[in-house]
Amino acid sequence: MTGLFPGFPVQRLRRLRENPVLREMVREHHLRPEDLIYPLFVVSGRGVKNPVKAMPGVNQLSVDLLVKEAGEAVRAGIRAIEVFGVPLKKDELASGAYDPDGIVQQAVRAVKDAYPDLLVVTDICLCQYTSHGHCGVVKAGRILNDPTLEYLARTAVSHAAAGADLVAPSDMMDGRVGAIRQALDQAGFEHVPVMAYSAKYASGFYGPFREAAASAPQWGDRRSYQMDPANDREALRETALDIREGADIVMVKPGLAYLDVVRRVKDAFGLPVAVYNVSGEYSMVKAAAANGWIDEQRVVLEILLSCKRAGADLILTYHAKDAAGWLAG
Ligand code: PBG
Image (cartoon, rainbow, N blue to C red):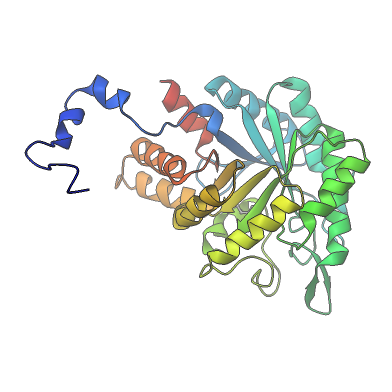
């Protein structure tokens, strides 16, 4: 480089930073409302709005209020939401997850009815629906892989039947993308894409979500299925397998502490990459902002932009509605 470029004082990088118009013209990365997916939590009942204490601004909403919130998001410029269900009853086999009249299925029908153009993504996992809080079928203290696949596949088909535009498995069982793809195809939903939580780490950043979704494991932890935070080569193996099984979009989760993984996945594969800016990342920003320690708007937009810069095409974030509003304003 030094041979080709003369360096200072001929080169002065500040020249392109002086003029605000020029700064915008040479900007390398952009954040747009259509990059964002807004996660929402649905509970049963009517007129229910339960604030999630650890996530200021986030609420568990009954279907009627979820539709209202979806409408506000649409007006702010949001194009996609992801629905997480918080069922009334849990059991060993997560029957609420694949109940054709389950809480997510009801929410999807209601939202698609009110806002047909809003893209509705559904989370496919069993942990909110199992009495033990694990993401799979449990026997003798072990989380069984293959018997779980059938329940995940059933859940995906029931979501598609309710009108979900995209299904997103977050359980981390081996072979689940293939099982879901096959089941969707057999049920006539070959047009419904799968966004796989491919590199999902066993992370402390999920803490607040477990309050929001009432999905904390009742014993043990998720380290036998979610990834070890120390591994990045393994993220590429996970992603490659999901792609071979039919994933249309792959995801890295969490976001900020794993942006190196986002970059590696982006460079290694040619398909769209999503990143999940998870609950703990949201709560940290909210807490610091509430104390007046940081400028919330500025920090949120900077974080979301950093996800784009790392190579993410899509960002799941609880800041989505606010961010879309700020981008429009
Ligand atoms: C369920 C699931 C989790 C999150 C998304 N889907 C929690 C977990 O795996 O424990 C976390 C999202 C967040 O923290 O915002 N498998």
